[in-house]
Image 1 (cartoon, rainbow, N blue to C red):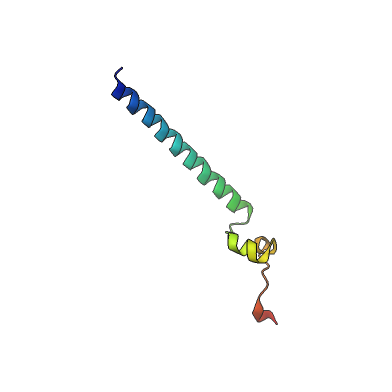
Image 2 (cartoon, rainbow, N blue to C red):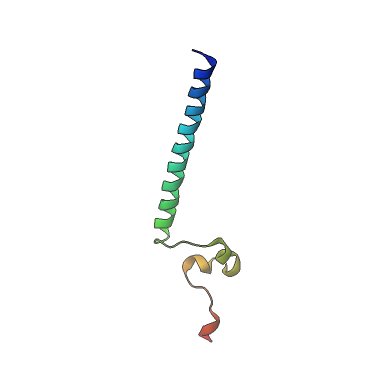
Length: 64
C-alpha cells in the first residue's frame, strides 16, 4: 500500500468518525428537546430568568 492510499484511508476514517459523532449529537439534541416537551430553552433566558425560564413561567412586565 502506498503512502497516498494510507492517507486516503486515514482521512476517510476521520470523516466517517466525524459524521457518526454528528449523527449521535443530533439524536441527543432531539432527545433532550423531547424531554422538555418540544420546547427550546434559550441560554440567555436561563441567565435572565433562572430556572423559571426552563419551566415556561417567565416574569412579564405586562402582568401588573
